[in-house]
Length: 98
Image 1 (tube, helix red, strand yellow):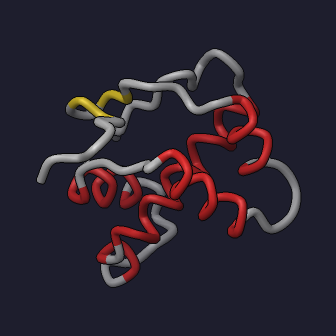
Image 2: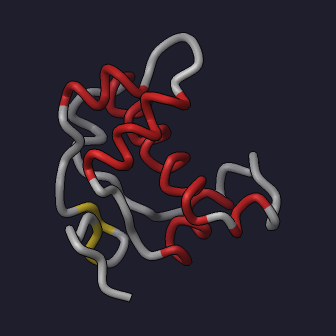
């Protein structure tokens, strides 16, 4: 499958998240709506198998949860935004490794 905006090349992100996205999608409180808007706005996507593999490493979701690619896009963006907020510079580019 070819992705329109090529967010990832292999396991490496090719782009950074905008600062506004990081601020909106991380921090205290429920961020589900913000994350969903940013996934759509950025056309955030990547290989489904890599997202599943990456998320599996957190141990928070079971196999049936990880079958939903639309939810996985939101999970990956949320994790990346939270990490980028907590450790600026260390997560400019996400690596989908284990």
